[in-house]
Length: 150
Image (cartoon, rainbow, N blue to C red):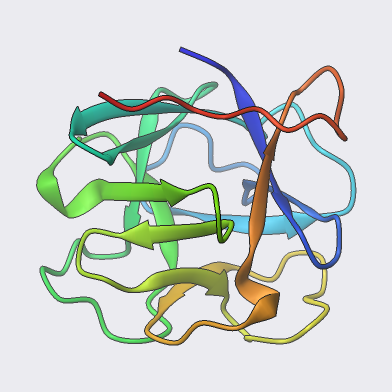
């Protein structure tokens, strides 16, 4: 499985864990200016284009907080030990979107053009240019990688 960093296309900020939360379920995903040691992910294919975003250092999976079957707008993204159908995402490499199985998209929780450091990631039903992400090499932060699915 290819390792990658998740980079906000508009600002160049990276996604990492809330500090001190590596071993805890429900730790939020946040933006940061420089990739931290806890910023690497992989994609585990499950069903067609759908799969799990796995946080490498913790071994946990990204999912909406509380794992609702139909998440509301602005529900935060967290890591959790369980890999369930409620943690399935697709990576749209043409539009640079991360899409949750329920059809919502990954955004900065503020939906701002330039989210502050420590702004959490959340799901929302709208699309716009500021909710786009690149998947880049941990070694070469400007080189895109293309996670594979089954």
